[in-house]
Length: 127
Length: 137
Image (cartoon, rainbow over all chains, first blue to last red; front, side, top):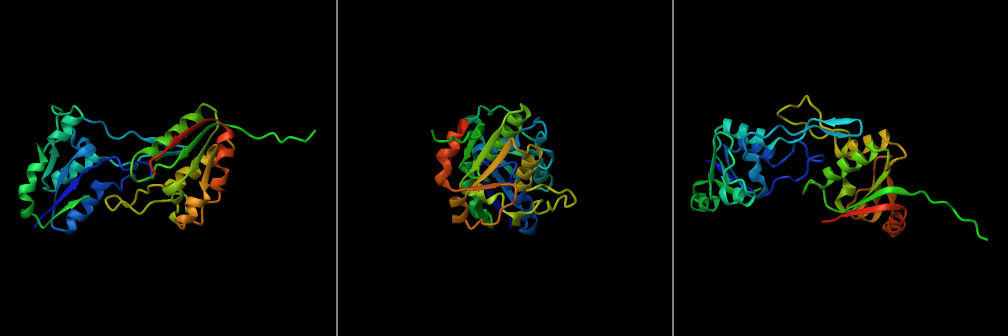
């Protein structure tokens, strides 16, 4: 039975977190728990946008950081694994992104409506 | 007439209380520091609150492995800070607030950082031409 994971907030640190972002946790835990469907809300809706360039390298002193998180790559990987990924329509609209193209396999909807289906999941986690 | 001591001044002081792993504030501060240093200016960061956890020696040079790509190491925030301190010696400084640090049990820091009591904050502000306070602790 699948879990439903709700991510309300993106951008929880870059230089200190790097690859170790919330979606990394979903990728790692989903495999162990029999699958996770993902809901992107708030600032995390931008992880579902198509056409964005990869994260730029970050120069800090002598180091060029190339291990920063790439949320769009993570979303693509989750879709490839068969996870349902939902992106919140009001969340997109709040950033003027209501017409923005999304990554393949991502579903756009008012994710509050998913509450009616919470009982179908093994658990609902607010990440 | 009493002798006076010429105190060193810094172009920019950043007081960073916004906690890491919550927003991109730390990344912004590192980028700002890099930009200031590339312009041949001086900058110091006063790390408050949970930012005092970042420079603990126990965190080492690299983060835990990315299990999707374990062969590619990712540096810790402490290693990045040490890199700036080494590359821009004398023009960059990272001050760890001892009160915040002790409150969180972070007692063993990398040697390159400076430890300073919060009783010295006003003097540190006075030694900077510009102070940016980035709050949110």
